[in-house]
Length: 161
Image 1 (cartoon, rainbow, N blue to C red):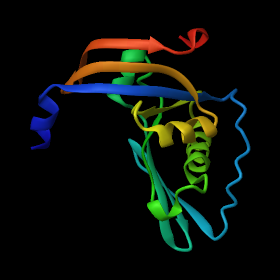
Image 2 (image 1 turned 135 degrees about the vertical axis):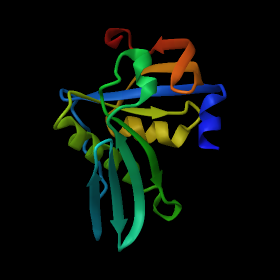
Image 3 (image 1 turned 120 degrees about the horizontal axis):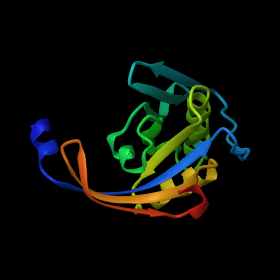
């Protein structure tokens, strides 16, 4: 069934944010009391988890390669995604704090790190900006398998395109 889902055309609409080694990160006010961060690295994905009082509060993945990034010639750069802050922990700046942690980890081996988000996801966009990421572009396309057609890329920061 997973293979069939990838074969059928799907509309893609994503905003692309980035951060690089020269970006001055804002200081975030999350205190991290009674918290532990766990990082699990494998060949293609790095998992980040934050536990507060032994309860999972946040999880995300950093992917080493995402096919959509070929549309803007950034295929070999890490992309942070699948971020989720559990409901009872929302509103505490955990999401931007953990985005910074994941990006700092990724910047040790790369010059740039990216985050993809749906334009409709207002809370995530706020957290991404709060963590220091800058909006680069929006990508609209049709995905068929691993290929993207009918691409429309709009750069929001002309200096960065």
